[in-house]
Length: 95
Image (tube, rainbow, N blue to C red; front, side, top):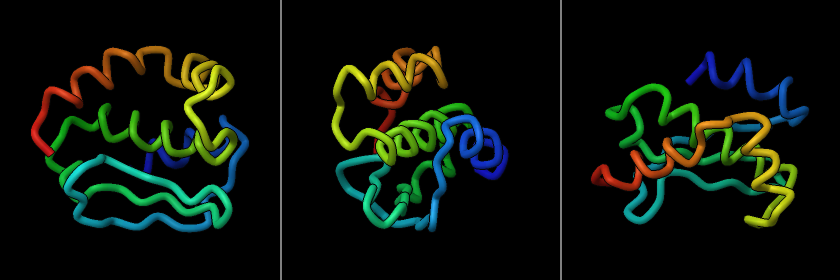
């Protein structure tokens, strides 16, 4: 997680005030864009590193754009061009 964190924060121009690990039953990550907090599913540690990086970048993009709008998708395209493949791979894995 640390390499994705160091690369994505300056690249996206966001500041993450806190990372939290939590067991989640229905999703891989979430963010509180007002507080600048990102919550990651503890199960991500068992997944390939690139998928963890995708979730981190996805949640960081939500710090800029809270919804899955066109602007959000453009941020993903710019900062994680293979996001569609990563999302598909992640969604095929058990939570």
